[in-house]
Length: 495
Ligand code: NAP
Image (tube, rainbow, N blue to C red; front, side):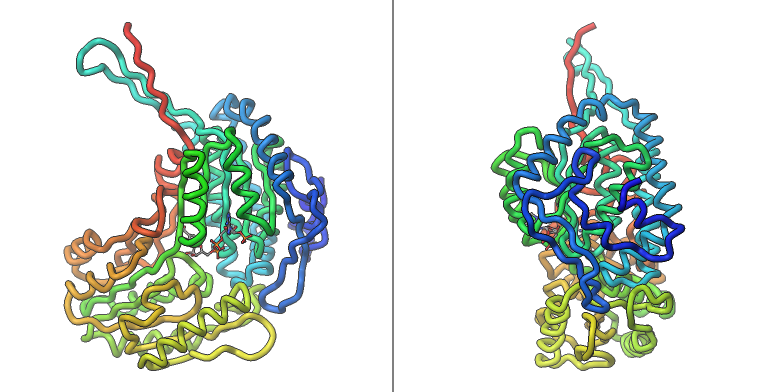
């Protein structure tokens, strides 16, 4: 058992952060990075440095690609049933270690323990789901229309995959890629976000314990993601880039991948509308908006970013939301009482505040919050704004924080136009008791996912992804997620 496994031992009361500074995870070994620098990991609640991880160079990344290449044939030829059993074991170990993993996520990301527990359950579910999918990969068989031959279509693993993930879901964004890639028979190199690398390394140790062979999953951290990623994509053995993060970085990576004609999956930013019609069940809509807005303290790509409320229910909704937001317990994520933890960095707090102050300057009215909290930790108070102008910056940019701006509307057409007035198209939410109106509006709102009388859409069994500038491809779902890591091979044969 290595140091990292010890650090997440459920028998331990505390997480031993020093054990995380040992190395990059390459070829099933913890190896020293060539560079001497370290990436410091900061607890957003206390601003204390809690660990430091290695800073991989381009040469270290080449080692990771070589390790993934050496393991590729063995893993591709491992029977699907065996791959499935290993994935299932990853699920079981994550569930066994759930509390320790949740604590780790909460410490490095800041999110409330209850959100971190939810993330671990969601993240583990990708292993269970893909363990089931691994043995259901089937091909196609048909007759050419001319009757001259048979058409056989075989689905094969796409090859070595580079996976890049953000800090807001350190476990789930990684497992949402690793589990289907491994189920498809691919080997991977994961580059987690520099703010939250500890969970990725802890999970690497867990995969090893579950029986994932050396080199099948490699993990590296770097302060030079542009050059390190470019070098991996330039290696002809790499055939896939799966990225979750901001639209800006996604565009840069698409351009880099285009140089080498590499298949890309892109899970990018969002600007979700949350539409409440007059006939909605008010309490249900308030429950829904608290989930859609405040899961992860608003640091979610699917977070309700613009809340459109029809005029007849507007005042009651604004009042109810203000009451609920004011009642939230803000504090250190690992405190079990906490409902809203700190933001990831001081820079994130400044960005949120700039959006709020701009909206206020433009005429928005503050119902609660609206001012940066003094003291240690990167906190922003739960905030409700009404009368927000449609051209405020926060109507067009991701707030990524606990700020709920409310926009009043009169007609269904106005709500649809407002909802679509964005370059993004990831998630949207609709509340109405009239199901035919709900379905009609759902079909006209431009987004990859809709919550109809639901504030949560994420489910490993459903295809997750966006349209417009929110991305390309889908993760999860019955065949969508795994298909991103497979290539169709057509064989024409006469018999
Ligand atoms: P980000 O700044 O785009 O970073 C995401 C990842 O990309 C990190 O690992 C980062 O590494 C890396 N990166 C940055 N520049 C890079 C480059 N030039 N080449 C290669 N990699 C690079 O996003 P974030 O701030 O971590 O996450 C928040 C964003 O992610 C939001 O826009 C959110 O909506 C989006 N998101 C989308 C989904 C979805 O499913 N659609 C889910 C979650 C989050 P470093 O950390 O080392 O800089």
